[in-house]
Image (cartoon, rainbow, N blue to C red; front, side):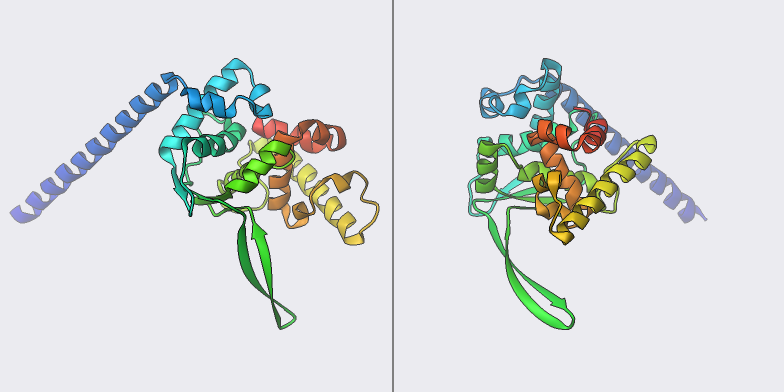
Length: 269
C-alpha cells in the first residue's frame, strides 16, 4: 500500500512538473511573439517586397501586420533548398505571398505547416494512371505542391510569375494549406458558420459551370479567362481563384463579382 501511495505521489509530482514546463514554454513563446511584433522589419525585407503590387495596395496598419507575420513565418517554418541555397530574399519573397492572404487572421501562421522545400526549377514528375485496365505513363511539370505539413515551390517559376503578376504558385499552394485546415481538401477553407451556405452555392456553382463549358469546348465566354486547371476539382478551383483575387482582382471583380465577393468576405483584404 505504501508503495502505491509513493507511486501516486511521484506521478502527481511528475504531472505537476510537466504542466509547469508547458506553462513556462507558453509564457516564453508569448513573450517572443510580443517582442517580434515590436521588431522593425529588416531593410532587406522592405527592399524585397516594396514593389510588389499586393504590398503597395496595403495601408500602413496592414503593412505592419504583414511585416510581423513574415518575420514569424521565417522563424517558425524551415526552408529547405533542393540543389538551391536558401537566401533571405527567397525566404522573404515566399513568406510574403504565403502571409498576405492571412493578414486578417489573428495570429494565424499555418500551424500544420513545418517545411518549405524550394527547388531551383520546375519539377518533372512521372505519373502512372490506369484507365479501363490500361496503364499509361505521362510526364507532368510541377511548379508547386502542398501536402499539409510541407509545401514545395519552384523558385524560377515564382520569379516569372512575379514579373507578369498573372498567376502565383505560392498563393495557390497556400490556398491549399488553408483548405487543409478543415481536414478535407474540398475547396472549402475555414469559414464562419454563416458563410458556408453562400460560399458553397457560389463557388461550387461557378466551378460546375466552368467545368461544363470546358467539356462542351464552346460558349466559354468569360470562362476563357480562367486557367483550365481550375476545372480539376473544387479545391483547385478555390486555389486558382485565390491567385486571381490577389494577382488580378479587377478582372475577377468585373467578370466574376460573386466569386470576388465570397473571397473578399473570407480573406478580408
